[in-house]
Length: 171
Image (cartoon, rainbow, N blue to C red; front, side, top):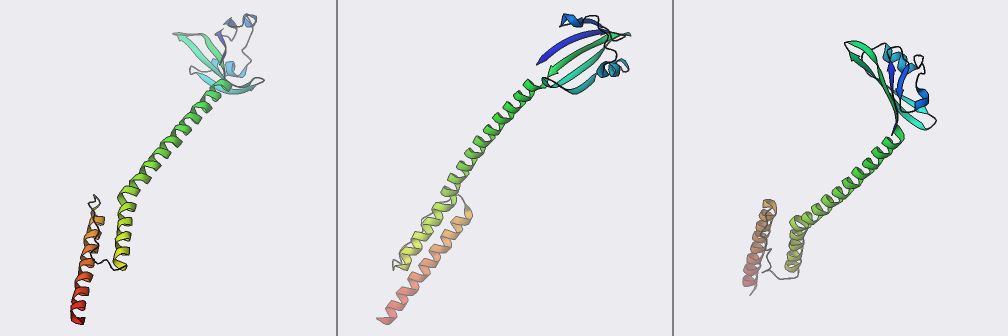
């Protein structure tokens, strides 16, 4: 991603460059160089070149006096591709994690809620077909379902008792 590195003197002339043909060129008219010569802070510019987007960075070289400027140009194509690949990776991991959590919650809902409600339904069906001895057997960590089970069994007990009283009165 690093395209080149250059060192400019205090006037903006190239005194060192990774591409030798630029040595000795006057870059003082370039926008990034002009901006960097006016400040003691780094200058960072995003540019569009023929090879795609680039980041141009100019950093003043100061040791008491302004000695010059270090410049570099970095291709954003590879960096953006790496960012996109990492984004895709994070998205995939999030989907897998989300799917796992959903599956776990589904299993827990089945164990903690659906299975006990199915037992209630089956017991109610047995009672409706005349089996007044049917009871819900439920040892459950959810106290509301346990209370519901107790209430249901008390109701079944009362129905069974009232049915026995009615049967005795009829006989």
